[in-house]
Length: 89
Length: 332
Image 1: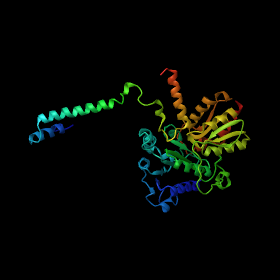
Image 2: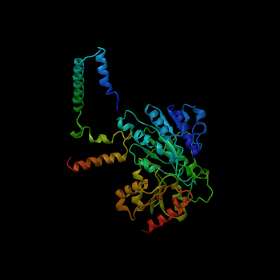
Image 3: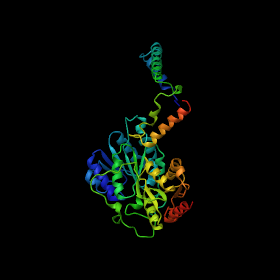
């Protein structure tokens, strides 16, 4: 896709060539950024991971479809709850 | 009915400076059916403007404006043209509130003339309401008289959810009982043509009992309300005719009360049969009123074909087809 190579790698080589960057600083930066991403992921996973079960109260599934919940959504929400109760969930 | 629609938009625009109208030919020309006549002159070209022939863009622009606080009333010139706008309606307007947890919403009212009986052929006669009733987050409203058109349209515009407002173009100028070879009787001769000046609202989600009866429930909307009224009168049938007015949210109580009383139910709509709104009505009626039914719920609908031109009157659910269905249901 890039006939001249990866543009980010090329920029790094260019900055090193003009004396504005070096391999040691690059390694340190990569380690710091990787830790930032890991920390952000850990914080996000505090909210729950997808396979983990339900994260929001079940009834919220029917909220905000309309400004006010019409009868058929109230009925379906109750039906969903009844189905889960019957299944012991 | 055109004047009623025009009055509704005018009243709303005067009261709320955030209301804007856009569509093909709605500004300078006042709309091909004159529904928006005079509005551009009165409110200016930033509030009432013409768009290119681009239904996707018309609704896309409306959704964007709505998300930022305006209250657009876009027009789709014929419901047959609505399909390029489907993605904007279904993927954006219908879901904006849900996926933003209420932070954004799309209080748009999409007006579109719909339905046949006007010799309009495949591209000017369709009834696509069943597509939109299937999509969560949309409301679908269909008036059958000038009085209802004004009250329902004001309610739709003031509603904070996206509303599809389908106007049965066959009855713009007068009710139609299905006898296409007779002259049009204008609205002035019909009780539903009395349209008060000033603002009044017909709440969405409420049906109207057009005729009380004991032997049969007929569920209808739009032009079919008048076809049913005509057939019932001509045949001396003691049918209860319910004009649904709003398809979603549906007035389920009115339907249940009626079918439990009569024990027989016919649904009539112009839209194609398979997966038409009649299928939903039939499902609801048999789910909720099964033990009250003396006969299966019948549907009298357009056939599962594109809307025909030269064979229109064999397709249109008119007095002959509805009359036959009524006979069969009552004899069951």
